Length: 170
Image (cartoon, rainbow, N blue to C red; front, side):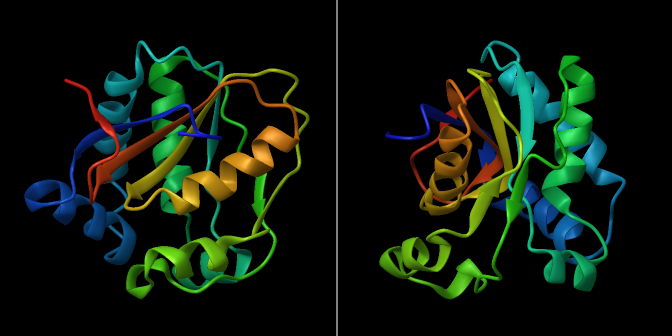
């Protein structure tokens, strides 16, 4: 798979899982992040991560929304797994277009050089958290920045996957 060793997803991006993601992401229903984070922790219990990092929103998007949903999920799953959460490790250094309407090639270009890792990771095995996996472009771009800062194994961990490509864990 390249920079990302594997991707673990809790559910397919449909039905209740899709509703949960949309409730958290677009309807300010923060309380659901606790359950989602714990389900992600259950799915990643055997993954072997030593550190949790989230795919950060750009500061302007975080200000618009008022919060970063991937950070919320990360806090809950890190707590459930008793792992450190490095909330400021990964920074989105430039504003990118919303990925939803972009084709695969456009997604890759959109995210090129979009992330910078502010931490020295020195071989840490990272659980890289995002809410939804579609093409893998976001995780790959973020993972590249982590790798450049010395990360060891990088495992993508998402709540839902929109297409095949992520392992489904019971």
